[in-house]
Length: 281
Image: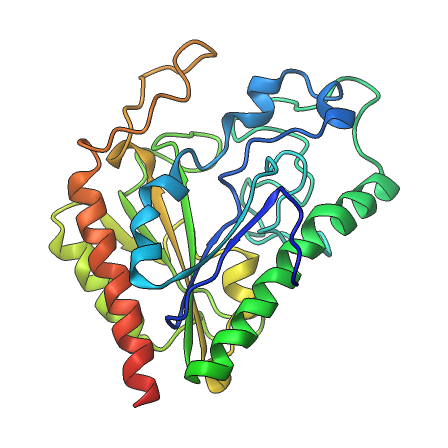
């Protein structure tokens, strides 16, 4: 892909590391904005400020791929066939109909039908994945091994999705369908898991969030493509009100508050680079 649309933001580096930002977008296309119950609800479940939290990745030589389109329009981290990532658990689909709190997103009569879902997939989903595929192939040609790091965050308490408070670090290494739940070499998963433990913050490996479609789809360990997802409780870099509303959410990104979290994430990304580089040696 040589000329990306404005909503698809690609930064090319030459290190064997790609960061994917599928949920940091908040843009609502003009032709769809009136279909939603409210713009705030349609943007509320974004992975707020995550691309800013990881801004240091470019200095490490990493490639980044980000969509500016809201996940409420189409979720580029869902199976395009509509298959649930977490059978039997509450989750959202390719074109979500509800928020994380199970509130309707669309006005009556505005729910997207199959033709509209196919249109959105062609406009926003397919180009995002074409970009990821292109960058993986480019870096694989240079390095042999590549780590694809899918970067996420979520509110720390969402009763509809999980009980209690989500751990600060949620490492996901779910493998491809039908394969063991290891989307990357265990050596990489172990070192990332250990760094999260050493942070002193709460952490879990393959807990409620095991990795979305990107983690599962692009994993190809024999071919040198190692994938993992990091889901962060957003309390680590922004302040979460006890009850959120249109007046207090999202709260701003707080660089000072984020220092400890960002330090660990820097160690994690350096470990990913070290892993991929040693595989090339």
